[in-house]
Image (spheres, rainbow, N blue to C red):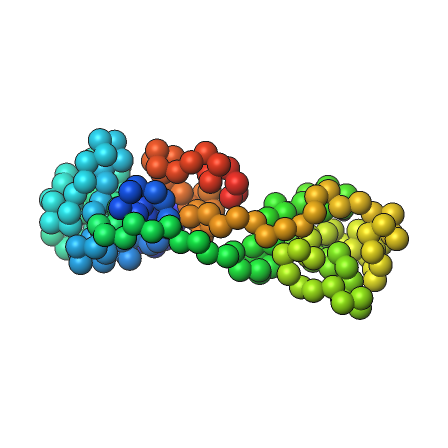
Length: 197
Ligand SMILES: [Zn+2]
């Protein structure tokens, strides 16, 4: 992980300790400072308001925010004090989210494709009214896309590996695995962790 610790990611739990989002350390500290959130000690599950968190000793090697006089331990998980909802958000259709859904794998030949040879295929071609959305777009390698051209998959002798659909929303969507803290695994379901690479 590189860059300022303030830009690292923090897991956000609602009042019932369900993970609902991730945010930056900078934003998490702001929520703690304003009394909106408490930091959780991920070892002991103790809750700490801002004033107590900043007094804590920083263990050797632990990520921390360096201040002028003192260093503050980086919060890894925070819990909101009053919000108890769960966002039911629809995952927006975007190129990046489509790559994630299809895990960089061509949905026709099953080959893992590099970023530079990846394309988005309209299953029902646009020329036949196919829309640009989750249900009609898949990742395809250039070879398969070229072979399919303006035809339906079956007309081109191609078979979809699975029908495309909108992927479920997950609190980890904004934080790909390399940016997550291992301690989050104590608060996030295995399903959420594994579903979003
Ligand atoms: Zn292919």
